[in-house]
Length: 329
Ligand SMILES: [Zn+2]
Image (tube, rainbow, N blue to C red):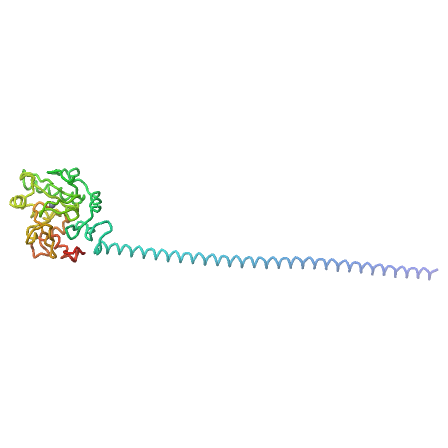
């Protein structure tokens, strides 16, 4: 009985041990599975993270490359723009220089029908060898003002619808007229003819259309009403008032445009302008605005041995024109 009991106990203990062993196995297995699961999940997460990091790295490199390319493109654009601006500035400077040269030393006839001297400003030269077209003359008229309306200088005889001048010349004429009337008390100076659209074909004292100094808009025939309204060479030059005008007009920028000394050996029709600057004309009433500097040099004969110069000879002397006979600048 006792033995049975002991055997039973022993068997029970064996059975318990077996159960415990089985339990332990199950536990180990469970732990193993759990560990495997954790490892698996962790691996998946790590792999996922690595892939994401890699994608981010590639994306970042791509963005950096794009940025670099964009910067290069902008730099190239800026360089091209700078080059274009430089080229444009150079072209403009060149054009400006060319324009300047053309204004200073014109060598060809202008397209608008003027000769090469019409760009000389107040030194503009129009004569039988340096002519202008009727369309040039019509255009010139649009640039002029009326000396009577602007400055109240009266016109002795209304002909050709003249009494027009450039504004600078008109202003100086006004000053000269005032000085004349102040110096010569009781005398009135009037214009007889300023700008002329059409020339006058009246023999040796007149210039045909296209050849007249009156087309410049810088000239007036002047009279002293005390001595009538007719233009007469001897009549004027014999009066002390007119001698004052000849001696003082340069101070106002005006010159005696056709002095006797430059009339040439024979005044003839057509008017003969020679290679040295003789004008073929002698007109004591014809005063021309050239500006104070040039007028002073002409009146004091800077290039003519101290004697009154002609505009033609003066322009040749200062090398504005090269051939007076053939009308070349
Ligand atoms: Zn005249």
